[in-house]
View 1 (tube, rainbow, N blue to C red):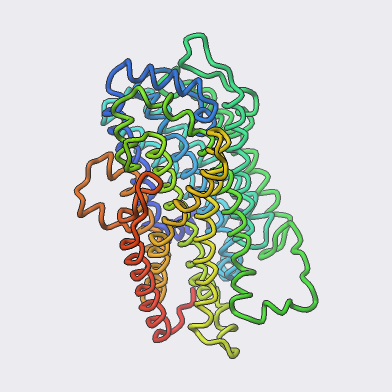
View 2 (cartoon, rainbow, N blue to C red; view 1 turned 120 degrees about the vertical axis):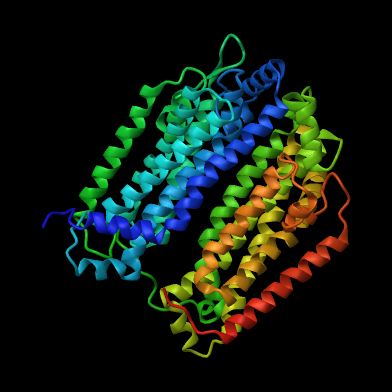
Amino acid sequence: MSAFTGTARLTRLALRRDRVKLLVWALAVPGVTVAVAQSVAGLYGTEADRIGYATTSAASVVARAFNGPVSGPSLGSVVTAESYTMLALLAALLSTFAVVRHTRQNEETGRAELLGSAVVGRHAPLTAALLVTVAANLLSGALLALALVAVDLPVAGSFALGAAIAGIGVAFAAVAAVTAQLSGTARGANGMAAAFVGLAFLLRAAGDAWGTVTADGMRVVSAWPSWLSPFGWANQVKAFDGNRWPVLALTVGFALLAVGGAFVLTAHRDLGSGVLAVRRGPATAARGLLRPSGLAWRLQRGVVLGWTVGVVVMGLSMGSVGDEVDDLVGENEAASELIAQLGGSDRLIDAFLGTMMAMFALAVAGFAVQAVLRLRSEEAAGTLEGVLATAVSRPRWLLGHLLWAALGTVVLLALAGASTGVGYGLVSGDVLGETARLTVAGLVQAPAALVLAGLVVLLFGLLPRLSVALSWSVFLLCVLLGQLGALLELPQPVLNLSPFTHLPAVPAADPSGTPLVVLLAVAVALTGLGLAGFRRRDLSIG
C-alpha cells in the first residue's frame, strides 16, 4: 500500500460532501463579476470616463492600496480594478476553508480515524482535499473567463484574469494544507491561514501604495513588497494590459513548495495532533467559566478580537479617503449619481460615508452569522451534550452565546463608525464631531444585522443540519442585494427582502426610529421562535 492509496475514493467523498457548496462557489464568482462588468460599462462607457478613472485611481494612494494597481484605461482594466479585491479574497478564504474542512476538521471530529481503519494511505486525505479545491478553483476561473468573454471583453484578458484568480485560490489552498498540519484544531488552522491571507493582502497593498505612477499617469509600477504576496503576483499578470502569463509560474512554484512541505509535515506527526504543541491550560478554571455566558465568551473572544482589529483598520482607511471622493468620482456624473443613490444624499461626501456604513453593516452581519453558528458547531461536535448534562438549561446556554453575538455586533458597528469618523475627522479638521456623528451612523445599522442573527437562531432551532448552508446563503443574498441591487436596478419588492434595505441612510439622512424598532422586533421574534424550536427538538450530532 502506498501513501496515496484511497485518494480517488476520498476525492469522490469530498465532492459528494461539498457538491452544493462547490456549485455555488463556481457559479457565484463569475455571476457577481458579470454584474460588476455590466455596471462598470454603464458608469464608464466612454474612453474619456475610463481615462479619468485610471488617472485619478493611479494618483490615489488609498485607491491603489485597496483596489490594486491600475492597468490602463480599457474597460477590462476598470472591471479588474473594481472586482479584483472581492474576487481575490473570496478565492483565498473559500480555498483555505475547503482544505481545512477535509483535513484537520475530519481529524478533530474523528472521521479521519474511522477512514484510516480502512485501506487509506497517509497522504490520501490531504491529496483528496487539494484535488477537490484546485479543481474548484480551476472551474471557477474558467467560468469567470467565459462569462467575461460573453460580455464582450477581450478573450486573452478574460482568461488571464480567470487564471490569476484561480491561482490565488490554489496558492492559499497550499497554505491551508500547511496550517492544517501545524494546528491541532480546525479553528486554529483556519485562524493561521486567515492571518496569512491578511499578511499577503497587506504586503500587496503596501507594494501598490508605494508604487510609482508611469509617465502617462494611467498605470502603476508596484514596489517590491507586492512581489512577496500571491495577491501581488495575480495583479502583476496585468490582465487586459499585457497579459503577462509567465508571472503565474510564481504562484505554481509557491503552491508546489507549500504542498511539498505539508506532505513532509504529515509524515512526521501523529493522527489527530498538530506539529505545534497545544499549550497547557491552568489547573483550575476561572470562575467565569462556570457560567454559560462566561464559557461562550471564552469561545467567542478570539473571533471578536480579530473582527475588531479588521473593522478599526478598515474604518480608519475608508474615513481617511473621504477628502479624495470628489477627486475620484466628482467629474464622472454617472458614478456620482450612483454613490448618491446608494448613500441617499446629493452631498457626495455624506453619500460616500453612508455607503461605507452600509458596507460595514453587511460585513459585521457576517460576524453575527459566524458567532451564532457557533451554536451549531458546539452541537455537531458533541460538546453541547456535556454542558446540558449539568444544571444548565437549553435556553440559558443558547442565550449565553447570543449575548456575545449581539453585543459583539453592536460594538463592532460602533467601532466601525467611530474609526471612520476619526479617519475622516483627521483630514477634515473635526475629529470629535465626525467621530460622534459616524458612531451614531454605525449604531443605526445594528438592527438589520441583528435580524440576520435572529434568522440564524431560527434556522438552528428548526433545521439544525441545514442551518450553516442556509444561513450563509441568506447572508450572501443580502450582500448581493445590497451591493448590486441598485446597480442592476432590481425592483423594490426584491430589494425589500434584505433587512438592510429598510435602514435610514445615515449620515446622509436623519435616523428614523420606526424602521429600527420594527427591525428589532423582528429580530426578537425570530430569536424567540428559534429558541422554542431548539427546546422541542432532539440534539443533532455531526
